[in-house]
Length: 136
Ligand code: CMP
Image (cartoon, rainbow, N blue to C red; front, top):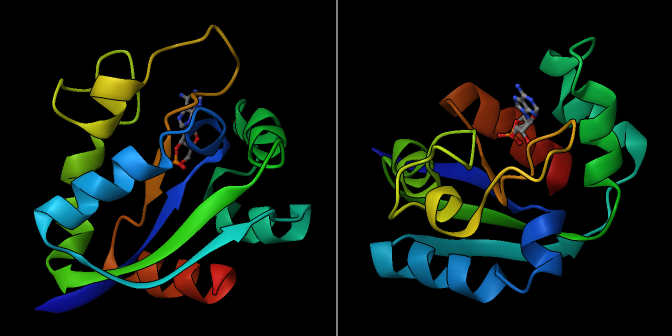
């Protein structure tokens, strides 16, 4: 079924000039950009977005990282786009994400307390609805 998902090009992706390369992969896969904006989220927005990670060791570093510069927020649509984008993105840890994925090709571990893994994609229909309402 046609779905929508929230994609973020995170601050590392924007700062490294990877936004265009990431968008090119999304468009090459055939998904539709419904809305796109450059965002500098405040802490409250990030607390909502990352509520499920509160209390984890990487939570504060994650919020600091996400406030370190702008992200590009994308409302993306297509059949099975939630699964499809997560497949394009690769697994969370960029060092071991498969080559051919965004994280596998462009990311690595920088020895920090948070994984700077270039992109975020919603993990379910419920998460997508919740996250889209936070960022758009
Ligand atoms: P994201 O998909 O945005 O969701 C949570 C983020 O937390 C994740 O990408 C990574 O940036 C970060 N993250 C998740 N797990 C870990 C971990 N074990 N150590 C450090 N950072 C993590």
